[in-house]
Length: 298
Figure 1 (cartoon, rainbow, N blue to C red):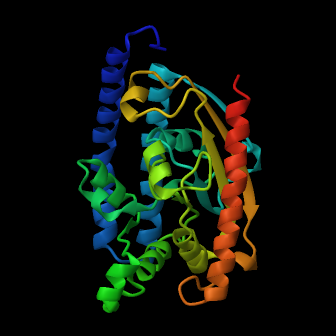
Figure 2: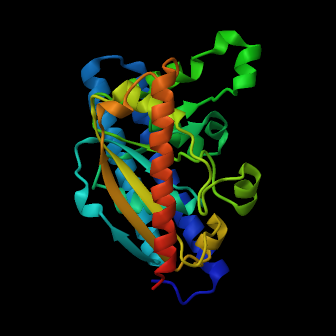
């Protein structure tokens, strides 16, 4: 471990390791992805997805080694024994920092299928990573506001169509679809601007997970509800690189998927209200869990 080094030196080493690891794997990842795109046969599509997930798993393995070598924060996790690999999951989590993604990948790798994140369409232009996310079949979503749809009625339901098309790729090989239901990272300013009723969370957005459950509900084994707490407060990615993330607490629970939370969120007003109430109750409990985790600092 390199924890004895000054923060900026650790940050440079860690960043270079992440960069080299990404450059090493992105080549074969793109080659297999392009071949998958060019060869339409079902068997090859199936095999190529297996190969892509294997490459991605190796990539995350080295990132986890980087985390241990340079940072090695104390991670206290509960509930991981309830998870099973080889099944379909939806993963929901609170979101405070880019570090959340690294923590999720470290804890859930090989415990459940490889994580696929729903990303904003603009993120495809991120250097290197945008290409990697595209190759990994991460769905790039374009959301339209209600006011925009009213002015452009031909776009009504377009976001649902995109979600369903993305989910159709996940029906042959088990996958874990990650949804940060707050839609953005928590900050005190955003919390105040939203007038959020929660102490540690922003208001959740129910549409994304509702569309996934509607498209794949008969395949989803369970909802993996992850709560991440940073006893010393959430840190930026640069602070993480400098080794300032000393401790992380994580709670995992698996929620069964019932018929009550599968329905037509877009057209059925009764279902939409019921689903939003279910999501709000989930968030009330998560807020309490976060408060408990932060109060019981070790």
